[in-house]
Amino acid sequence: MIKKYYTQITLFLIVLVLTGVSFLSYRNLNNYINEVEQIRNSNRVLRTLEEVFSSVKDAETGHRGYQLTRDTTFLLPYNLAVESIEPKINTLDSLVAENAEQRLRVDTLKNLIDYQFILINRILYNTASSSLYLDRYEINMLLEGKKNMDKIRSLVRSIRNVQSEITSSRTQKETTLREIAPIAILTYSLLAISASVILFYGTLAALNKKKQAEQQLLEKNNALTKEIALRQFTQTLLSNILNNSLSGIMAYKAIRADGKIVDFEWILANKKSTDLTGKAEVDLIGKRLLSEFPDVKENGTFEHYVNLVETGNPLITERLFSGSEYNQWFHIEAVKLEDGFVATFSDITERKNKDKQLRQINEDLRRSNEDLEQFAYVASHDLQEPLRKIRAFGDLLASEFKEVEGAHDYIHRMQNAASRMQVLIQDLLSFSRASRGAFRFETLNLASVVEEVLDDLENQITREQATITVHNLEQSISGDKLQIKRLLQNLISNAIKFHKANVLPVVKVSARILADAGHLPNLEKNISYLELTIEDNGIGFSNQYAEKIFNIFQRLHGRLDYEGTGIGLAICRKIVSNHHGSIYATSEEHVGSKFIVILPQA
Image 1 (cartoon, helix red, strand yellow):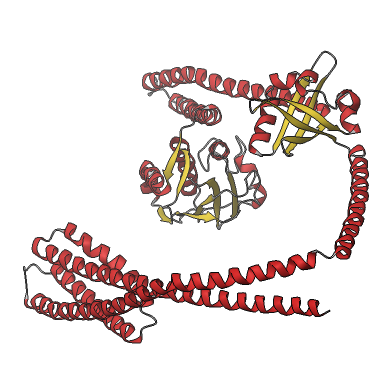
Image 2 (image 1 turned 180 degrees about the horizontal axis):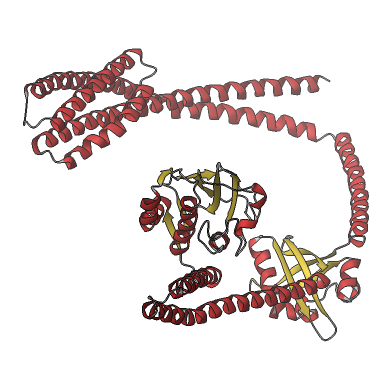
């Protein structure tokens, strides 16, 4: 009993000594670290002070060079100083925050520097607006600037001297602590070693007790028995989960030669995996992957497995496995397991077969569309020549029979019909080109494109006395320039054309970045879009026709009221579709219409 209390008291004293030693060591080291940090802070103060003063001198040099030469390149140092001076002063202010006197000096320095830049700004403004080399106002400003600069120099010198004294004092203190610290740490370490030796012998005596050791061994045996039972339960549970899984699960370990993976060996295969592969578990465990399924080498799956084990990156893929007795598609997901991997897979052959069918349907549809577009292009192109002949012979007939009563009216009607037909054919060609042409995408500035379109429409704008206003068009989009110009030209031209009688047309063109376009059809989420709006004060239309007007040959007004073929808006929708965007319209009869185009940003 006495020995027990003696051991406890000894342990308590040892812990107390070690705690004291640790505290003293920490205090000495902390004091030393604090002094080193203070020295670094002082050096940063001096360095930052020099950077601030250098920026002021650069500003002085820059504006004087500009005064002498009127060359704006001399203002580069001044502009750089304007941008950098405030962060540097703020840094200096934070570095001297704990020194009230230095902080007061830095605040005074900041005020002087602010005033110096005010003087420089006044001088530069006067220099730019005055034709004289140096007028009286400018001379006075220069004298005032010199006086203020002298104050700045004096204050910088004062701050530098005080900080240098602080640095010197702290350096001496740091040197003293650096000399004392090793001795103190050595002393504290010896005390700690002595205490550890005492603790070792006290612990050794306690461990010699036979009864305590036997009790510990019994407890460990009991714990081991429980662990074995838990592992058996876990193994049984895992086996049940694996064999009842709806997906095939297989585990492999890597077979290496000279450190390189040359094959994989089965270590686990659940019931579903054997059903899918047609091989029993006893025929797989311990077998090599390449010997049982050699086609994994040919279709690249083996290399993916090797990369998975070497890098740890998970694998998700779909693969076709073909053989004399099987031809199946599998969806495979695999993850690294020690020096091997676990793969889960499911049979997707039926879905894949439905996908080959869907691709064939899409391919047939694509060919059909191409044939239709080709037919429209060729038909429209071949009709041009007969129309040119009709118009040419019509001109000859009009000239020859101009004196015959009634003939001129018939010929004029024939020429008008031929002209309308030619416009229709040209619009059909434009629609065909929009459907089948090769696109050259580039970054386009909307303001520049709209400016070119307005130049092209100058005659129409002048004839109709239209007012065109543009807002916020400095954004850029990615697109084919010719198609985007045609899109804007059609929309703006329509906005001018369909104006009310005796009311001059007013068209507004504006753009804005669309925060979220995911709610609109055919547009992707997480992509930045631009919304372009063309709004007019024209005749408008009922909103029930808002979708119909984009169909080819659809007109809401007779050709005698407004010229056109009914193809322009169909071309617009095709162009927007080519650019993976969206177009729609809103309108009110006798009030006006608004066409909204949404395109991906550049």
